[in-house]
Length: 153
Image (cartoon, rainbow, N blue to C red; front, side, top):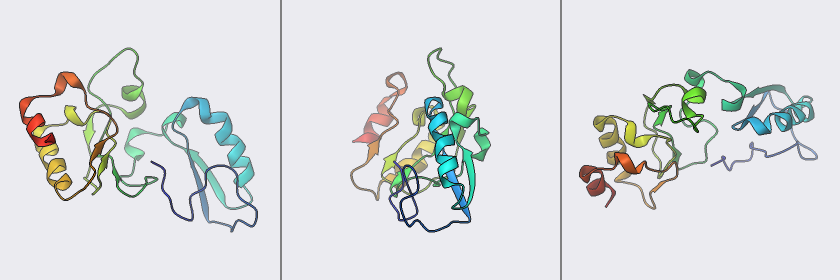
């Protein structure tokens, strides 16, 4: 889901890399934190380096819709209203909150089905003009109902 533009790098700076005003390193998983700091040291001569993201405890409200996502990927909600003992989403992203809907065909929400019906209807309205629709964040089976089945057809 990482953007595919010329100013996105995975790993250390390539030979001949141009300088940037800001270098942002987004860390999703805690096991990647040591690598993030190695990357920060590697990038420090190319611009002001900031390390953030869910694994770094970035506050849930700091999420910006559409930032650091490949074109076509949309996240319409963050957080979770459930407290499953194995899941880190509530502690990392906070309680469920609905976001401004960005156009895209890949819905990457953790809990799209936990959103209210009005929000779901807006998302399905946006998806009507999309092709190859995917729900990459999954859909919780216990929340699927007849209305949703009709919308997914």
